[in-house]
Image (cartoon, rainbow, N blue to C red; front, side, top):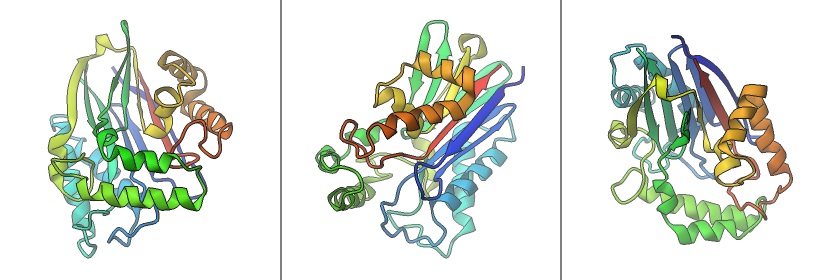
Length: 270
């Protein structure tokens, strides 16, 4: 049975899109590049370059249906690092991303999640969300400091930069949280699993720029989000997020890092 994948991605504002999405008859991949908050990274290429190359290498590695998802990610991370050895890949701010992968293989759905880009399964018992929210437990006081200011203010920007600098010190460490960057070891810290195709009616692989409509803004249920995906596709779901965010452009009702975050979603049916 072929997996039908409908996908879209849109930037959250005027800056280049740092999300990336791809789909094949057996695969859906979403990457969410981590914001640099205007800080240096030690890399001359930038986050959009990084997610495009990581995504391409990951899809290529998974052309082998027998390859484990975590092994494919480790291989992709190593290959991308090899594409820019002239950059300072030891810099704690080196371009990085969350990863979410869903693969259909012989009636089985394999999944992999690294950080907070979720995979949502729709099944006969309702909805289940696979995500890794370890980042939410890191530096809560500094997070609260950012969220007390309205977006687009100098206070917000300065607090966000302090927060990101502190996050970088614990990123990809045992004391912190894990994301895809330059070290293939990150692949060892993914959440992986399998499900029978008969247990899942549909699935959505997305960045948190989309999932926040349900998880943070609480302006829709997963049932409503999937109904939107069926009726209008990924673009309509992203547009719904934008309409909600437009009612709170400075982040007073829903404190956040940006007025609008980059958004990507792959909707999978069979």
